[in-house]
Amino acid sequence: MPICSLLRATACALLGLHGAAHALDLAPDPLSYANHDQVRTRALHLDLKADFAKKTLAGHAELTLDWLDKDARRLDLDTRELTIAKIEAQDAGGRWTSVRYMLGKFDQEKGRALRIDLPKQAPKVRIYYRTAPTASALQWLTPAQTLSGKRPFMFSQSQAINARSWAPVQDTPSVRFTYTARIDAPAGLRVVMSADNDPAATGKGGWKFNMPQPIPSYLLAIGIGELEARTLGGRTGVYAEPGRIEAAAYELADTEKMVAAAESLYGPYRWGRYDMLVLPPSFPIGGMENPRLTFLTPTMIAGDRSLVDLIAHELAHSWSGNLVTNASWKHWWLNEGFTTYVTTRILEKLYGEEVATMNLQLEQEEAIESLKDIPRAKQALLTRGPDTGSDTHTDEGLAYPKGAWLLRTLEERAGRAVFDPFLRGWFDNHAFQSVTTEQFIAYLRTNLLARHPQVMGDAELDEWLYGPGIPASARYAKSQRLVALDAATAAWLKGELPTARLDTQHWSANEWMKFLNDIDNKTDAARLKELDAAFGLARTRNNEVAFRFYRAAVHAGYREIRPQIHAFLHSVGRKKFVVPLYTALRAHPQDRAWAEGVYKAARARYHPETQASVDKAMTAQ
Image 1 (cartoon, one colour):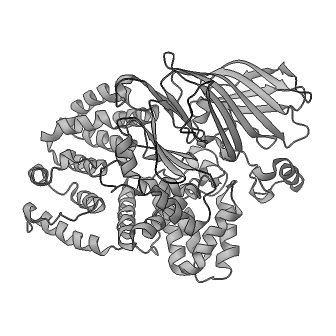
Image 2: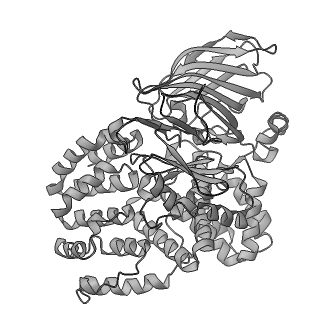
Image 3: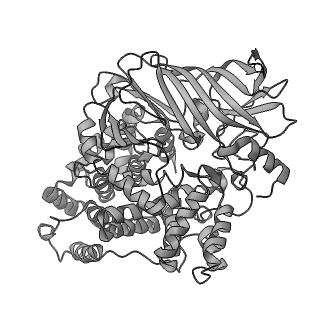
């Protein structure tokens, strides 16, 4: 986007490592109140105390500032439900004095602007505050909601704009900063953050953290609970509740190999260690790529390492998303589409082409199926024109497969000998920067299409980026094992292949998922009962398979497994599973009242993000 060259040069001189000239995006972010075109946070320090009785974090945040506009005297930050006690500014001599501030009008989506008026440009400001018990980023779990039932637990989910509910920050992905922290927590609980975590730390004098690489605010993360640590490799490890740590360590044993595989494709891992935190089941998503400490749902623990594609995906974010970040949420696909593509490449490197192709085919088929429920305006990777807020963003789920499909199309046509160096160059040239789609298009045209114009023309590229659905030119992945499965599925649906003769002995989790996807809404309760009796699907430990079986059961009216569905909805808080199940249940008059009763009892177990999504689904017409 065009900006004043003088301002760009000034910003570069001030930011140094934290933003090269061609990386700065000083356009307003419609989901942030921050005046980051005038002043930017270079470093953040948090000094907070966790109070589980009050469900609050309280203390102060200290922001180190880089002033881009010599005439600016105001700092605008993002907040949501923060109670501000006082604000101080530091002068050039290191003295702290109180300054005036005001909180703006509350907005349901954005929260409140915190406007700090300064007599002079201050190198640092310090904000004393406390969070609300209802902070949208934080879930405070009682002991009864944890595995052991002995101690409470708290964790954050800052993406996309929830960091502002637990720290006053410039809550936009276009601003990157380093951070340090000191956190006080009750005895017997360990604190971990998206920073360097010392397994030998005791917390005496507070738990201390340092994140030396600059990150956007949505990657601020904290977890507090009864945790144990296990080392997986020279630079990888896992934290989990004591009763889950052994299963987690077993499931994640290949993580070190994944890091090496990704490095062989896209260059060095630049974040020091790669650790993971397996959270309680109420974690609302599959994984969150918080740098140095990926947050994971326990629903990926199947006992057979069959769902490790989730780990590959979160690791891939160490290049696409964490290293090179979307400048605003309009450009979300630059994070998730790229990461989904890289995930497939990591899986292929480790487990072979057939495994990766099965995973890819399932991903593409589910993307096509999802289109019927997504408005056409939300099917583009992005919309033309200025970013005006969440109304200009693509569908959250479609950005993953459609973005990856575009990159795979470029790779297949250019060949890996050309495309792999191109993609690695994108990561290397934009490391620790926040970028826009326009920057990617310019890089693509200069570094690939100018030399290989046959790969993709402007009209087709526009169709991928701005058009609905999947372009007709897209090539579909085809796994030979899944082709064979299609024949078996068709024969089973026609009644030509008895359930007892389904050759499932060597089916992978992906094959089960595809089979259940393909029979959903095409069979009756009696056939599903046969499947359940033969293969124990209602009792499977694989949550991806269980979810698809439960969904098919609801659609078919197979109500004998209500106890299992009830237990699932009470023990799992992942939006991907619970929202579709409640939606399916509510669509059937015979199931609606039962579903509402289940949700009433289970709602308190869910993260606020999940609660909001299910609330919406349960009140939809």
